[in-house]
Image 1: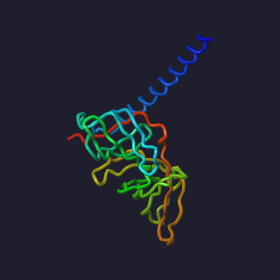
Image 2: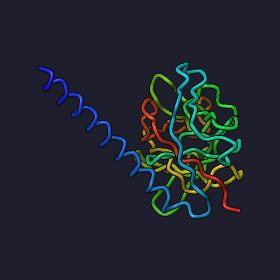
Image 3: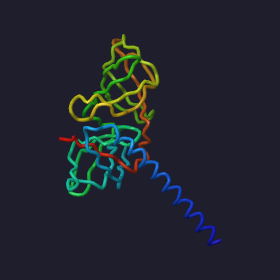
Image 4: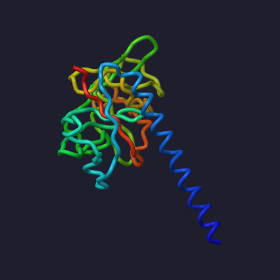
Length: 199
């Protein structure tokens, strides 16, 4: 019976290591695409469970060169940015926070061009982001890829944010409002890559 318990323990440990290896492989994908930025990998050590705040704490801080404002990504896309640091740790505000202070400039890929908009809010119940500022004349299909624009000098250009899942008109019937879902599982983030502009 003890032998079975040991086997189960090793099996679970093996599964966890496989999962961690896959996550690290995903992070390495990022390192090949954002050449203007230095990447700094970190481990998540705490998660604020209050959905209002939606923050995570990582094991890298000022001592490692982390500064406020650095974007945070994983293999599946953008997750947020650093909002505070101490000597050894940093706090990242996730893009799923319901108290979004600043809006993110995004571009949506169409057949032969990009349409630009603003990632303005997040619906915690439907796990959907809202993108505004889209003209009704812009034809955008479900499944269109949404990335950062690089405008505003906060996030680099071309970082994946999610895919369009719905298009509707705003309250005044003047412009389109897009619904977007991220590919990130925000409930299970263990490793993070911070992006620091290579100056």
